[in-house]
Image 1 (cartoon, rainbow, N blue to C red):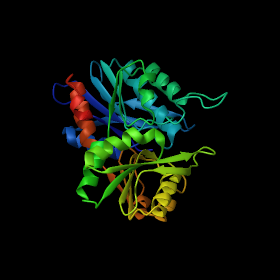
Image 2 (cartoon, rainbow, N blue to C red; image 1 turned 120 degrees about the vertical axis):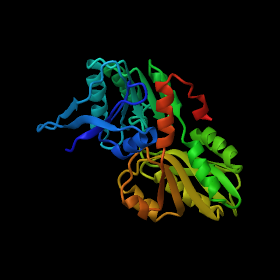
Image 3 (cartoon, one colour; image 1 turned 45 degrees about the horizontal axis):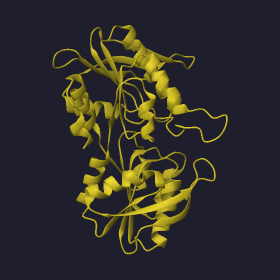
Image 4 (cartoon, rainbow, N blue to C red; image 1 turned 60 degrees about the horizontal axis):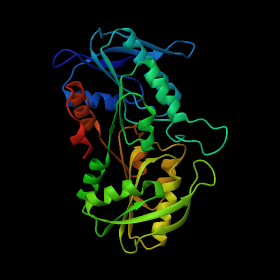
Length: 322
């Protein structure tokens, strides 16, 4: 496996940023926004399949940021993150921030039945135990996950980026649609940003990763519907929602989500669906097949770069949450 990059110091000589293998393209783009030069780190594997980490730069006394979304392969990328945190902590880094654009294991943030784990809490414990001093992330699947950490969490939002793109399309008679009751708050904030109506879909999950539409509240006939969610995994929720909107008279259907997971055959299903365009961010790297499914990825690199610099300089991040 090829070496991945770390980033040399800049400004006052104390900022270093490392990248694992999960999304090196995003890491390089953040580097460009920070006008930083690349450093050196080995993030690979031993012959027996175990993750191998070797930090080549001196990190003693430095402010360290490790960029690593825990996307597919989730277990491997999570282990890379934990071992990189441990490596720089043992090398006497002054502060370690885990930059996790996409936080995996977030679907099980509570027990819905007996004998189930609370995976999101366990992962939070692992990150803290590894030695992270703080976490920088974006659009957690459940806001309660922020409270699972006993260290500071800076929780960025992609809504301003996504809503700016949608606003630039000048869609006629738009209505923002929440695909489930839990996303009403998110959809309502999105609606306020673009000046649109609001509709809500009630759904049920007969089994994991499947969704069925039960009912809809709100007027969508003759309107351009914009489905807003935090993530798209198998695409089941999106496709069911789009079909329900078209059946109720929506003229066009767009979709927005922060994290484009697109598990299994999700892209093929979306390509055959009624969705004209699906807008996601690049918190998770997208395959070439995404373009054929009319998926557009908007970069979050400038936002993360600004957040990293503000954290490094001990400045407020409140302006980035608006």
